[in-house]
Length: 523
Image (tube, rainbow, N blue to C red; front, top):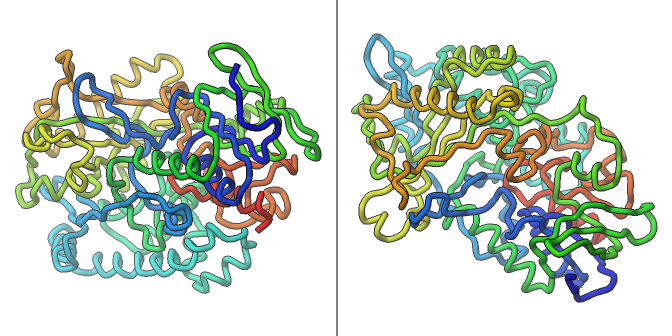
C-alpha cells in the first residue's frame, strides 16, 4: 500500500487537474503539507497534451486547447515557465452568397477587417456596430476580469464596478439574442457574435435562463481583453509547469489513486479513502479540496444524487493531423490566415437557431455548426521537426448543439453520423475534401479522432460530458453565504470545491484553484 510523508496532511486535494495543481502549489508555497490524489496515471485532467495517433510525432492538446481565462497573476505568483502566443487573425467565416464563395475575415489589421465587413454586407454600418459592441464588452472585461481572483462581489457591487447600465442590461439582464439583433443586421455577423455564447452550452439565443449570456461573458472577459491565445507547447505545457511548481514547493502528488469516499463532520479532520491497483487506503486531512464536479463531490460525501439537475455537455471535439492545409473556394484568403484564427462553419444566426431546435427535439443537427483552429500555425513546437519540415498541420474542431442526449441510444453510430455531417459542412467551403489532406498513422489509419459528450464523460468523468462541470455561474455571489467569501464553499467547513463547477469556474483558468487556496489561507 502507498506510503505517504505525513500521517495527517494540512490539505488533501482530490484530483490533479490544472485547478487542483494551482491550489497545491499555492498551499505548499505557504508552508502547508499537501497531498494530491489523482485517479489517472498522469496529472492534468482535461488540460493535457498527448500523441493520439500511433507512431506520429504530434503532441496535441487533446481536450481543452486555448487559453484566455488564466490570470497572469497566477503565472507570476507560481513562477511558471509557461507562455502563450497571440493569433494574428481572430476569425474567418466562409459563406456563399449569390453563388459565389466569400467570407468574413476578422483580424490582420483594422483596414482589412473593415474592408471584409464592407465586402460582405455592402456598407460600413455593420463594422461600426461591431466596433461599438466589442468596445463596450472590452471595457467591461477590463473591470470584471480582475475580480475573478478577488473575494466574490455581490451583484450590486459588480454592477457598480462595471458602471455601464447598457452593458449590464444586455449581458446580465436580457437574453443575449436581443442585443445581437439590436446591434447587427447581417445573419452571418450575428452568428459569429453568438457562437461565443454556445461553447459547451446548449441554449438558444433567447433562452430565458440566460445561460448563454453567462457563457458569452466568460468568453469576452478573458485577460481583460477577451483574447484567446495559443499555449506554447500545447495545453500539457501548462499542467506540467503547474505540477513542477507544486512539487518544487513540497507538495506530494500520487497518480493512480482514485478517491472513493470523504468522511467528515465539517469540524474535525476528514478521512479520505482512496483506491489503487493494489487495494484501498486512507489518509487524514485538516482540509479537503475537491478538484472534481459538484456531482462527484456529492457522491464522495455520500449524498443522494439529484438526477433532475444532472449536467449535460453539448459538443463534438475532433482532432486532426493534416499533411497540408486544404485549399479554399474563397481564393481571396490564404488558408494559413483562414485557419490561423477561428474558422466558423455553418454558424450563421439562423443556422444556429435551426441546429438548436433540431437537437432539442432529439435529432442530430442536419447542418452541424462547428469551428476550427490550427494550433501548429501559431506554435509549431507541438510537431516533430520532420513533420514541420514537410508542412504538416493540426486542426482542432469544436462542434456546437450536440447535447449528450443525442448519443445515448448508440454513441458510436451517432458519433460517426455527426462527424460525417460536420466534415461535409467544412468541405462545402473547401476546394478539396478535408479527407484528402489527412495524414496517416503508423498503422495506415487516417489521423482523425472524435469525442462526444459521452466519450468525455467516460474518459474524464465530466458529468454528462459537460466541459464546465455544470452551467457557468455569474461572477458574483448569487446566494449569500452558500459558497462562502471565495465561491468555493460547501456545507462542510473543511471541504472546498476547487474545480470548474465552483463559482467563477470553467475553462482553463486556475481561478477556482487559486480561490480555494485563498479561502484555506484565510485571505
